[in-house]
Image 1 (tube, helix red, strand yellow):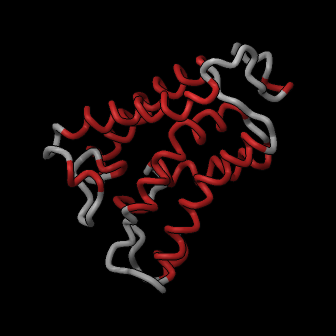
Image 2 (cartoon, one colour):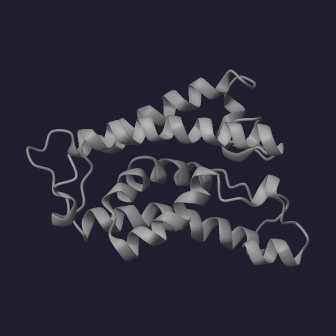
Length: 184
């Protein structure tokens, strides 16, 4: 994706840094598969799936549609963001905990603030917090900027709780032995 954008003269700091939530999770998801990192799992499971599903339902492929490379890149990367945390849950036995919910909510706020500063410094729109995307998305159903930002944060927290719900009442969540002493 980065190489294609560079070769076509479209790579810019304003659009190609891996700062969108799904962009950073593609990279960290790959790291998680290799390292079996529980901390990365918490984020990819609790917020990665919800964000990727939104992107699959309303893909931001720009002017490119099927069968363009951008279409496949969007569908495959976001499809992996759904399937990788499900794999880690079903096959590897990882489970989020209440501490995971707290960490992911706090981490999401900190990351959003960080990205907001980057947007301000370089004139970008990562995570669509500077303005709505130019293509149709679920954000179109929300009020204009900046009023949609607290709504999407609230929706994000609601999705975190929704995805945690299947594990909320387990007596002892299953987490990898190497992470069981991480303070959960």
